[in-house]
Image 1 (cartoon, helix red, strand yellow):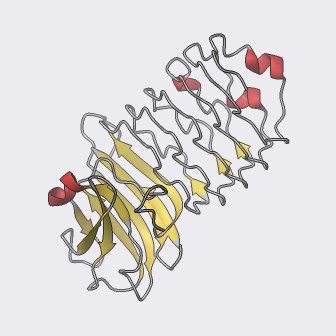
Image 2 (cartoon, helix red, strand yellow):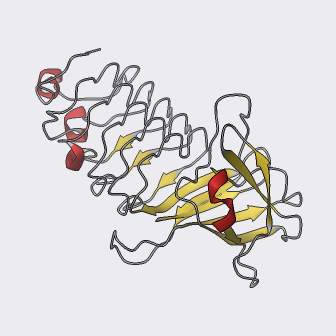
Length: 274
């Protein structure tokens, strides 16, 4: 199951915040859903508010926080392959409101590739995402102007393996909290996860420590994060025996600190450097 809380601004071309709300941790019982606080513009149908799999649409519902409860007040348009764009129904009132999506395990807020590339509503903050079975966070909120990822945002994503490009080109993100991935014990791929987050200045200590035994690919992880000033040995303070590539992990990060030799010693089984 899956749950997210966010605040988003639907004003074109961007606007808003993403977050997730959930019940107590218990991975066997997680309510699928995404909740966002959004400011809907007059033209509420202008930008898609989510991207889901076509197979999920029958069980997918949206609650706009206006007292009418969850339902089918949305329209869809085809995306790539089996994906659908979700748009607010024209009956939805403009203004700031809380929106809850339920019934999708793969929902995301970015499609940055292919024929169906489009601009979504703005996501400003990721508060919570939860799913006991979700394995793929690929492109989750990439190319969005998020400014904050809350502490514990991913504490209920124990099986999420691929985080490739999850937050790439989030050019307004300034900090990543310590322990953000502590409960993501199945993470195997963090390549390009924060690629080109140009304002990212600080990353909390031990960011990937709890996945140190499973992470295989950390290439381009902080590629071109030119504002990053954190000590690299604080970001990765454990040994990563499963990791085979850290190619250009900190390329373009001229302000980072820390001993290179100490850092490299934490990756004893690399096949690709850089």
